[in-house]
Length: 489
Image 1: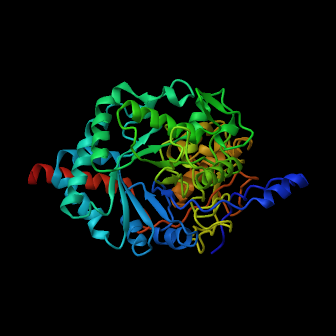
Image 2 (image 1 turned 90 degrees about the horizontal axis):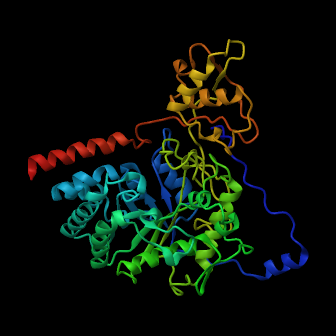
Image 3 (image 1 turned 45 degrees about the vertical axis):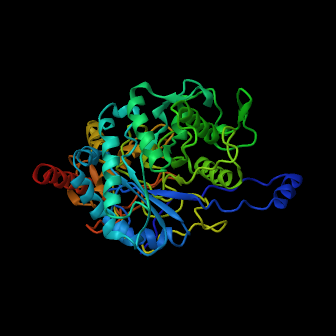
């Protein structure tokens, strides 16, 4: 198949002064961070088939562990027998039915764990997806602990609890910190009661606390902190917190959590980082070059660093890089960049180099990708475009226009190029159907690639039922769970 166009890998740093170069050559490369994994999400309109992701991306790049955002049957089947450690997620939408019924929890464990064990090397069951996030309010919080306990009981009954642990991913806004000082952190008052119950549960089962970090959001919110601080740059000005000094965001975030845990009475609890990454598009400072700096800095830091100021000998049990692939249907409530976290583009082409387990060698890309024909939808410049704005808005409300956001890779294309980008995004998302390029007669199908510099007009992957994992599957499972509750309890 014709290879897709994708972001060129960022250029390497310019020539270094001789003395510095000799110094760098004398330093051995850091050992691989064996506790590093990668997140794999499924919020994509045209995803690569799961078997291809495992065959072309995970195995050739020696990825040791993966965290699935949900229990995709295709992904779990593809991971069987690979030896890759797996964390499988339980979506927030399932928390209520799982909390309401042990039978529903037993059914979920049977369908998504027992069925694939022992072929799949399960490591964690991650209950919820940042259920304590401030934006969620009380929507999921009342169901977290009971759902977690019911999943644990189901694992006990299936005699699987000795092989995996249950965790709850928590966003870093679960603890408050008005300053950049880790010593000032504490769990939000509105989550205190539930958090105390959760921490007790985790401690009783020797499970770690899973924290989700969003460094670009933190950087956007803290205007007085330099980008170097987030990118593990040596020239970063350290943040002083009493006798402790922090020269990077990651260590400060870990110690802020340690402080919050200590204040809650759980100072010795282990910590797992469920998410840490940097986006490549959709915002200012969201570029492949900056993402590479963050991700490489993080992997090297984890390999070299003995710990943090509050835990000198502590390294997070695992750290999951975010993320494997771009997802064009992720919520952009936190920012347009949410759809551009992939180390790989949606079609499995590396945007930059980072060690996922393969060491210094280049990342292997997906091969033989089954693209749709080389056709794009653009605006017809020969038509009256005085009312094109309504068609532009309609396209973007249903497709992915995040690259047009301020700072995005397509911000600089002139009108009506931005309209063409929106039209094409909608057209590809709808499998290049002729009617999806109508736009009241303003659309035009072309076989000439309209991409401009780094603003790429994508071609979609051929969709198939086997390749997709849609939210409708979760909705169906919820209906089945409620049937269990009302019919079997």
